Length: 193
Image (tube, rainbow, N blue to C red; front, side, top):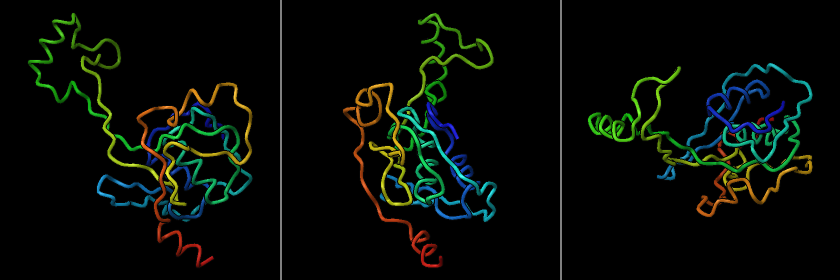
């Protein structure tokens, strides 16, 4: 499966995708600012594909892509091949500033900027953009964060881009890597093998 240059997407999709290759069990842990940990798991015992599996990743594989690749690696379900991934382990909510700013201020600002609030094509043009608010952090089922370090491949390929120029670990204000406990559900599942 080629996940190079895949910046991620839906957490739910990453969990469901992982579920196609494992029987059932925890896929990712999410720790919020109150240190409460939620374990998101695949609860469907069916497996869609049991054959050999290789996941291609690169420095631009990020977020939900890292959750999927990390879970496949942690379960020993397939080989991760490529370069170290981006290392985006933060959970964010996108806030559309056009929806939270008073409509009259929005219209006056749009007029000052010479922008129309009318649709420009299939969507609407944003005046103020969006604010991404970090609300939690992702952790693999091993307890390791994907933040800062990403997923290290089982088989490393040489990179055509300088790894020290891209990735979360190159950002001066990035949250650090840390570790939390493995989920109890995983410990119980291993005991029953």
